[in-house]
Image 1: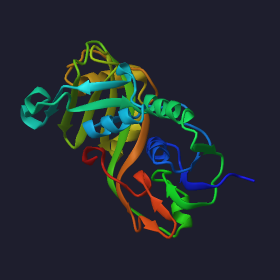
Image 2 (image 1 turned 90 degrees about the vertical axis):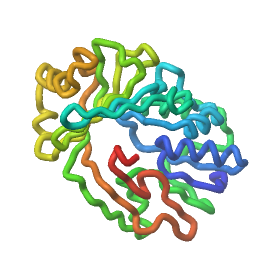
Image 3 (image 1 turned 180 degrees about the vertical axis):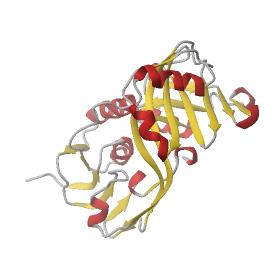
Length: 272
């Protein structure tokens, strides 16, 4: 007979794993339902604030320095040469944020879970006093509970990838707003790193063209759009895409269940 659990968490992404560790720290027995298959290649990156960093440190799940790069400056470029800068030293802060690769963060959370006996990894849901749905925006369980998920699309897609840079990023996060597009290069690989996470929000009409370009043509487009600030940019991963949307579940909780993370709501990356 299966051992009883107090909380069953459906979905073992960053939200689900973090929640499992927090609940187990409060002496609750947790069942964590694993996803059927992890993505073949993870190119997403998280911008984490100081509170998130402290929380993950307390769970012994903070990634090593090469996988969680402090942002000391942020440059935001607009039309007609406009520029806004934010600096950590002017805010009397250790960093404005930390850029952590999603894969590295999931790995560290997974290592912490292996040392937590109150969390049991499950292949399917188990009956519990509380079910927490952390399955992301495409959650199937949400529909089982009769919850509507109303989405408004921005007519933009995000293109994400990892890039190698000719020059070090110097712990600067860079953004360009141009003709409706938003290009972001987020520093990875530690203080002297030459790797960045790309998030390029483009109009829906252009996403197929950019995704289908050969690497030899896509890379110069990126270097041109970033005004050559990091020199030549080379793809270090596959390109991924997804539509950008504002979405919100009609209900976030009910008898014996609650939604968390993207299963409850999603926003444009800039609003995150």
